Length: 422
Image: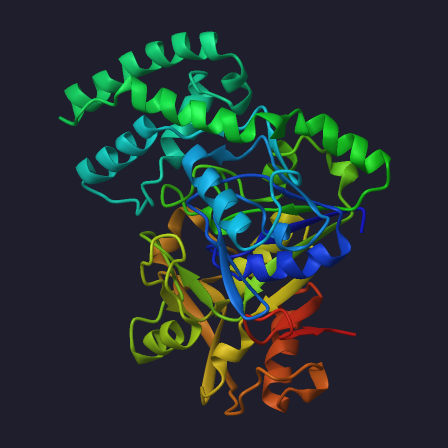
C-alpha cells in the first residue's frame, strides 16, 4: 500500500471504522479527509467499544500518526473530549495527532444556526445539528475560522467580533434565538489553542513529504457516496464530499498519489434521517435487520431505516469512485432470513431502468430477485469456505452484480471477525 482510500458506498454507517482499523495494520499515517462530528465511527478492539467522531480510528494502533485533514470541519470541544478520553484509556494522542491549519472550526453559533434552521424548516433534512452545514457554508462565504487562525490571538479576537455581529443578527432577527456570547467563543478557542497548538501544521506538505519518504497512507472518509453533496440524493445529503474527489480535496493529495480505493459495503442497506430510500423495508424484515444489526446512530442514537441490498446504488458508487475492491460488512446480520431480497434494477412508471437516478429516486420501484438464506451463526467463521453454502452464494452473487472484487467479508464487529478472500 502506498496510498489507500476507504470510502462508504451507500448512505453511511457501512462499517467503515472497523475496516479502517483493519487496514491500519499496513499503514503508517491515517488521514480523516472530510465531514465532522456528525460522523460516528465505531471500533471494537479487545472487547471494548470506541466511538470516534473526529480523531481517526487508527489512533488505536501504536506508533501510527493520525491526521485531521483540511477538508474536515472540526469541533474544538469534541476533539478535546476525544483526546482526553483516549488518554484515560492509555492511548497517547498528543504526540501522534496532527491537525491541518486549513481545517475550519465549528463554533457555538454554527450549532445554534443549524438547530434554528432545522426547527424552522417545513421540510426537514434530518441534520444532526452539530453545526456541520453552517460551518461549510462559512468556508464558501470566506467568513470561516480555521485551525491556524487560533495561533494569532489578537487577529482572532477581531475576526470573531465581526463574525458574531452577523451571526447574532441572523439568530435574533430571523429565528428569534438568543445571541451567542463572544466570551464563550473565545474561551473555546483559547482552550483549543492550549491543547492543540503544537499539533497544527500544514498537513498538505506533510503528506507529500511522507509519500516521498515511502510512508504508507490510509485516507478515511465519513458518511457515504449517496450522501455526497454533489452526487448524492440532494437535498437530503451531507455538506461535504465523502467520495474520491473529497479525499483529494480534503488532503491536498492528487490522483496520481492514489494506489487503491476500497468501498465499504454493508450486506444490506441503511439510512439515517430523511430522503428517498427505494429498498427500505418498513415491515417486520426491516425491523429485524435493525435489531439484529444494532442499527442505531452512534452519533445521534436515532434508529436507522433498514432495507435490502441495492445493486444500482453500488454500481453507481463503484463507477464514481473508481473502486478497486469491496469490503463486505455485517453479513452475519442476515443469518436466519429464509429469503434475502436483492434489488437488481428499478422501474419508473412501468419503465425499467438500470442506473441510479438521483433526480427521480423517490419515484422508483425496485425490481427484486430473491436468494435463499441460511440459519447458521457465521460470526466464528474465519475462512470463506467455512461459511454456509448459501452465504457464499450470496457474496458471490453480489460480487458478480457489482463487477468489483469483494476482498474482505466481515462477520461481526470484532477485529477478529474478518475473512480475507483469497
